[in-house]
Image: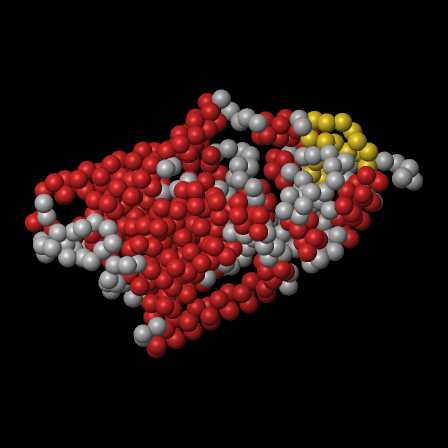
Length: 498
């Protein structure tokens, strides 16, 4: 337990030495992990193929900016892909691609890397403002980047989440500084990047609850800004905006999927979450209410939403940020407030933070190995098969249908049909399969390339790539044409030969 002295310098020297040594070990391990993060990001950013599912879909949609192709097209005709998010990320990346004359994954991945770095800087600044110590701010920023592998995976992903998180943390930083009106506008931009980022506005409302006039002003600015932004978006992109971002994005909840994702969440986050929850037992200081509320809300949201089919580790990015802030604040307070009535002392707390970081050592070892192998040896496994099939798809003069969107994009072919998502939508009864069935039955595609044989019966909805109806349509109108690189190929049968 902490010494009763009011001056931290009056604590027993042995206790100070122990906690100081542990925090140096924490800092050293974070530094090693940061090297692994930089290496992994540098290698992954420049790769010409999809590294995380959904990157190819988002890239293809970002390329539509500045062209005649609608960002939110009708789901009643091909091509059929779901533009799952509001337009800010697409517009930003699409504009940067045109400026850089680079339509590869690199631009979007660099935006994500910069956004993650910006998020860490914002967290460090917020904690420094709360406790007056840059050491605590650097601890929070470092923990955010390294406490689990979530940031490592998403910092080099061509996806919307890092930008949405950065804008959210910018809004929270402004709110903690008393700039609530500007904070509301930043949070509107976050929602225009990813529509589920509503935890931060709720946390600001909790902060402002005692000041009802300021609260009403914040809510009014946020609501008005969001209404204007959505209205302008619908006006510019058309009436299918709501269908893409709400109807088609509401995947079903599955208990088995929830159990798997919860296990993944707790694998590296259980101890940090417990440490952050333990800090709630400390007496609340000014400014901490915002981050405590953010931690609680993001924890509840993560728990409720990780069971949604398609959810991944991006669903706890916000929770990771909140955990990092609370740990940094608690570390500073345990050192500076000797009479603090805490459930743990500074040495015990530092030991637990170090233990939480050490749990990720095997995963970071594997990450460094994979990054070095990708850089020095080249791609392996499924990516090799994909690259080997690209020339075949690219040389096809007619239209190509494939359930591998990354393959289509590398071959310079449009993504005609997003198999996984539209299979879910058909299974839920919210989308009619008529458009894809008509295209298959009319033999619109000169070549179909599938990652598994069409003879394979449809799996459970959580694993399915096509429905039984689509399978039967392909079997009736197409015939096997061999295999290439592990993919099954199909060519149209002559009309009337069914």
